[in-house]
Length: 168
Image 1: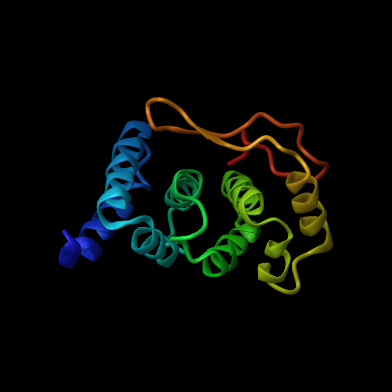
Image 2: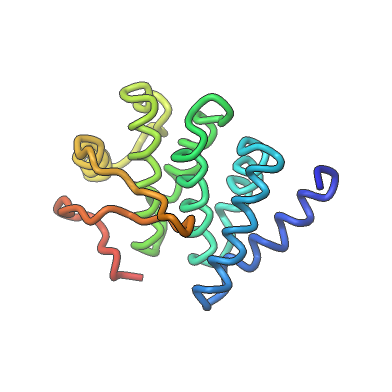
């Protein structure tokens, strides 16, 4: 699989933008299996390379898959500084669902490394965005992975100005 992983990932990531939820979930499950076979680091690195893809659904799924890797594997195998920088770019995404998923991804990173996340965040984030992140970081609830392997985001009270999950 290793030598062909980039080509396989490209095909799977393109399908993450499909308008059918079942197609996205099936491709996500294959990517999770690739994480088990190849390790999470190379798969997450490839996912990060695709975060600027045109499809907002694909961006949302990529962030969800990164959360899945973080919740399953933790810090040691992953490039958290690189991941935080890429994920933070999604805080400016025009789609509220992508912004919300980026906030949740950063909350998972925060749960792993704590305040060491702050210097990893890009300089020049809007004050409102920083406040929103701080409020989210203060909440202990994290996304979970269901028995079916599906990422489930927590239901939390949204801070003022936070994007709604229903938007997008």
